[in-house]
Image (cartoon, rainbow, N blue to C red; front, side, top):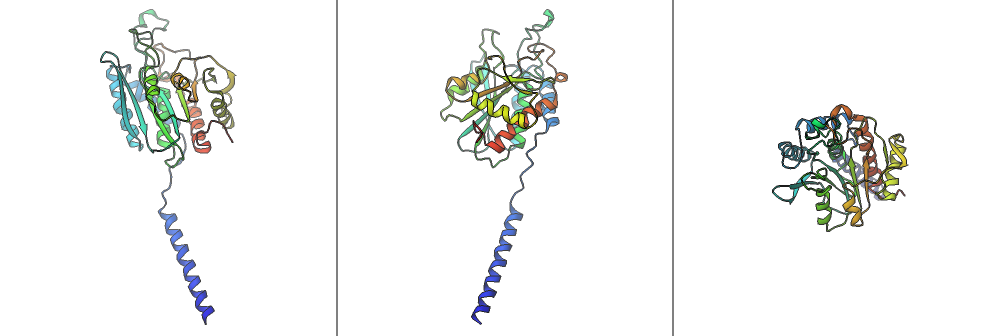
Length: 303
């Protein structure tokens, strides 16, 4: 009799455990698929270019900040603005957080566009603003789409930084990479890695190894890209040394990589327009960074 009572009790207990497990599974939130949407990223390029000139102090620059903040808030990120510079040359970095934890992975891109197209082959257009479809908008579009699809339960905190005043060097006595310098100098907690994306939308995208970047992190990212089938884009060949937004982090001893196609034919010209940008190029970069974050959790080397 005691054995029968025990068996009934054990059966009832197992049934209760199974029911509770089923309820937990039903209540567990289903994460959105982590797929980089190339067409949506390309639409973000078009939106940015529609604002017109986006150098500091311009109307388009202000529209960019409002639009970026709205898009990031909608994707579940909190936004803060880091202010620096002067009234004549303001610097407004936009910083997006979602989780508060460490270590940090920083993904960055500059959102300003060059005030003057001083490399345009037509001298009459050299005082016109650069549309910035690739040089500015492409990197922002990649980060913005990542903001929508990065899982919320990553074991590392990812911070997205949209740098201002990267592209105004030698205009009105300004320096290059002003926004990233301000941001890097303000860091108290050192991130474990920084990745900058700049001019990554070219329809003939080719990304060699930028020489100032941290080699171990760079090789990890390029290997991931090649495993994803992007070996003709992320080419394992040395490229130029570039003064870009990764440099202030390198100078502080933080591993940083610049993903950039500096062979872009329309750099700093009025021809830097959306027809030169390919959704598939944006996807190659977005897929690589998403894979790095989701599968490797932003590690500097693969294990």
